[in-house]
Image (cartoon, rainbow, N blue to C red; front, side):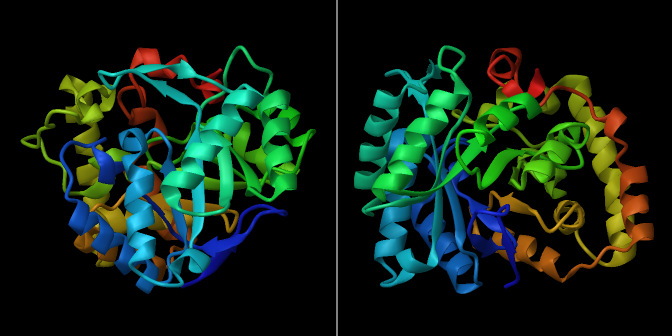
Length: 333
């Protein structure tokens, strides 16, 4: 497994990370036993970065990771655990905004440490900026937790260039977690150059656009209860038709190179720079194996040009979240 370093101050991690959100209900029903087996397979393959959120499954995702690591003695030392916090939930599972107050951060952390069964979190980040709390206060509170030894590194999630600069003025930032794929290339104009100028790495989620770019989603695929893709504009109506057309164009390119659509899409993100670590949201071992094979694919300039001609950024249909969730994205302002 090749490694990449998150920014100038962050840890060295596997070149691909495992995003664990889908293992706890975000995409409908999941199989805990298969999820744990997938985490174990990832660790066996040399994957070290495990990404979660304290609100994924209302804490169940952290418990799942705890159980997976406990079943493999010594694996906690191998794993680099990245945790997002701050999302407020209600009894029905709805979201009620984000809380970035220092007192709330200390509370969130205490619960995460307990659920994960660990004495520290490797990378800690607020999931979305709290509009009522200056980012300087939020980052400052995490910096105090670093000083206390409860957190190793500070991360950010879905913030814009100006917020990135303000945060970095308070304490070293290891990485920015943000959506980046052939279908979501908005960070290339200002956010990615700013991160590079500040020495901040990028952990890219949504590299397969929640399954749309996997090559496995079809017009007949449906979403089940609890699958948030049912509210995602890219998965609905004419948008889905247009986007699947782009996937088919990418499939022609991938077939010509003897790889799958998913492998081509992941390899494209890997090719964008050694400071970018794609997160793979595999819930099953077969999908993980397919994704890891992208590491063996080297794209030349001509290959990249072919891929980008097949999927022009301007042709992607639909926003990446529904309107309500888009309002929480500092990165889109």
